[in-house]
Length: 193
Image (cartoon, rainbow, N blue to C red; front, side, top):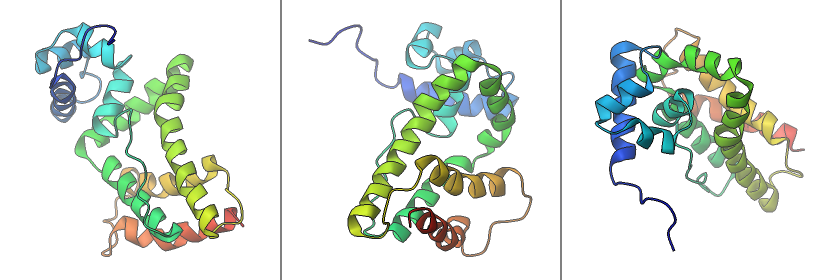
């Protein structure tokens, strides 16, 4: 038996499209739940049933949704690291995120309840998928033990976030994820030795 009202098809996509358009046009501060609902032609209640706050909505619309696809199993830790870096780069490399990131992070940090939820919903899921990747590497004998997933998360996320949102240089000609894969793989191996 299905409980509650069934989700209407297309609302999630319409809301995410509205968020991205509003961020590009007006920026994070003016991207309100009211404005998103009006732009998506849905009720505010439909938005709040799916996302608890503006910060959660913006993160889900421009970085990644609550549900994540499991990390690709390339057959090697080096390949898995490169695949995860590709995913991180593609999720962080957008005009909309450049508009939203400083204020989004400030909102999350300013509210302990939101910060805890953000950690559970988004960062916790990301870290859970990294655990899958690391456990596969241990099973293949590429790591002697699973390193601290929080450290691996920081090692993989930090350089990409820094390059895309702090540096002004263009990415290396080989591509950012491809250029970082070998040194970051070595760092993960060192942590799992």
